[in-house]
Amino acid sequence: MPLELDEGMTDRYRRYAIYWTPEPGSALEAFGSAWFGGENFGLEPDLAARAKRAPARYGLHATLKAPFRLREGATADDIARALDAFCRIRRAPEASPLGFIRHQRYVVLSPGGRTAAIDWLAAECVTHFDRFRAPIGDADRAAREIDTMTARERAHLEDFGYPYVLSEFRFHISLAGPLERCEALAVCRALEPQLAPMLLGAFRIDALTLLGEPEGGGAFQILSRHRFMSADLARP
Image (cartoon, rainbow, N blue to C red; front, side):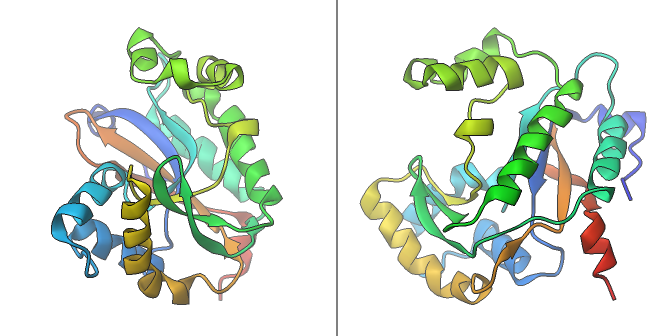
């Protein structure tokens, strides 16, 4: 069920996001806590620190609805209730097993083949929850390298607040970056033995997570977690 957020609590967050995050108590959650919590898995400390600096702010996650500010009149509790209703009538999507790739100078985990169900979910998240998002402003545009974007990416930024949605979306779980190619290879060699046992079967999203970015900055915080209908039916 959605977390009830009182007014004082919602005032602490400047942006919200909808992500995949690991199942609580899972091996993937334990890995994420260790990796972003300071374990370097044999990497040289300076490289490990640079590799983790950007993704650590978000934790082990995959973006379904990128961080956004609330439109006037909307509340975090509105999003939580809508997200709960959204998940309760949908089946948990599956994709091919995850594997290591280099994506936009990041080391990420991404399905190697079948992704249609997750791609569809991501498109639904982008459009369904856009009613809670405030329009982007000049500061949002300035934070993006607009000159390097395609025309379609620029259109998505204006329409949905984020360029890599719909036709430009690729599901990925960020581990490290941005890195040069040789650095990315070193990170892959260090992390693959840790993650290989967790990547053997089909990848399944059992729930979506609502997160908030503290008003004073810092790492995003989990506010509520919402299970899909078929995930609930599969519970013992």
